[in-house]
Amino acid sequence: MKQRILTALILAPLAIAAIFFLPLQFFILFASVVFLLATKEWAGFVSKTPSSKLLYLFALILGVTLFLMPVEHIWLGQTLNSFISSGLVVAAVWWCLALLMVIGYPGSASSWKESPMIKGGFGLLTLLPFFWGLVVLRSVNMNADFYFGSQLVMYVFLLVWAADSGAYFAGRQFGKHKLAPNVSPSKTIEGLLGGLFCAVIVAYFASQYFAIAESKLLVFFIASIITTLVSALGDLTESIFKREAGLKDSGNLLPGHGGILDRIDSLTAAIPVFALIYIYWLA
Image (cartoon, rainbow, N blue to C red):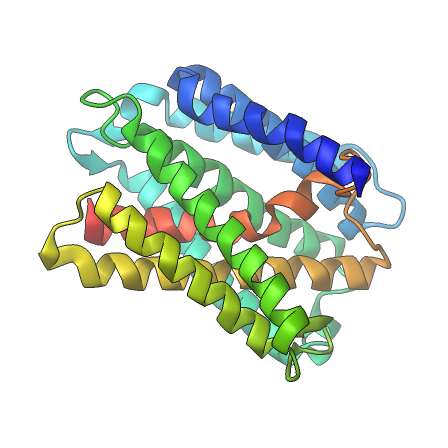
């Protein structure tokens, strides 16, 4: 527990500082490092004897997307570039597929668990939209207000953290009905509802802070609820891959916390989904 707290006390301020104070080009570099570290851990899901090939391949794909989509082309006026918005739509489809995988597990794993190519593809669908979702949210309205995009990113982080904390305490206090026993036996429906309750409280205060127009208030709350639910899906989906790989944690980079993926699993789903909803219905 001491290790866990100490690691959090070091990493949380660094992550928040990167979100709020780095210029966009350096924020992209920061997000790229997170992407590559997560990719290195995903290689352990793909093979019991992971090589560096997946890391090189994902780094190449990330580099190609950055070359095709330089910073100044992310937003075309007030409209997100169609290349990136299409990628976020693909991410939403992927998380719908992931939901079916979670519901159908362990039977759903029979079609992919022996295929390194498919598992690698799942990794790309998880991590690349997460990267671009971070960049999109961070860059919203940046020319007019440098910190607005940072606040959006931080809002999604707070939603996920509130949902995780609420689920933990509600699950311990009231948990009786298993949410996905074949995937994560400790998670309960009561915990999920407790997490949603805490997330809605965060959403209420955020709606006041962002001064959300009354005409968009319902959409904002629906977006926040969907983001919270899909964050739980991100956690459960990573649990499937860890279970199939025979791993307790995705890695050991963060003392007391496991690996990078163990910390961002919920965010890999929440960030691109919220970014997609925001650009189409809230921007």
